[in-house]
Length: 79
Image (tube, rainbow, N blue to C red; front, side, top):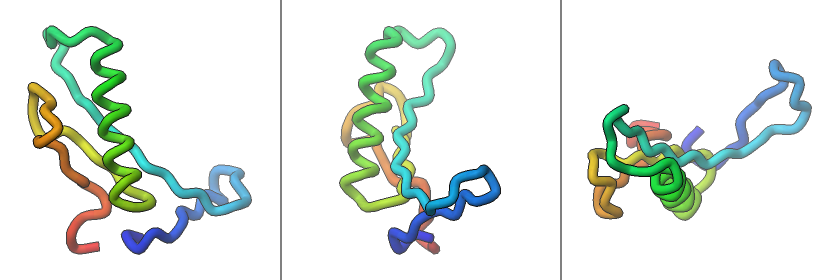
């Protein structure tokens, strides 16, 4: 859940609970960003997610992927 508890992945052959932070930078096929720039933006989003707590997913809300346009999408505010 959103309280920082670990994920149960026993169904995937992982005996111990795990915790993850994910950063997403979704780009259009015709984006002018290079692969390296996309990876850098995704890494920034992951760092942002980690800073907000465990088991978080952060995503840029829109292009041009400004650091002011990033948000935590999971867990949701209701979690």
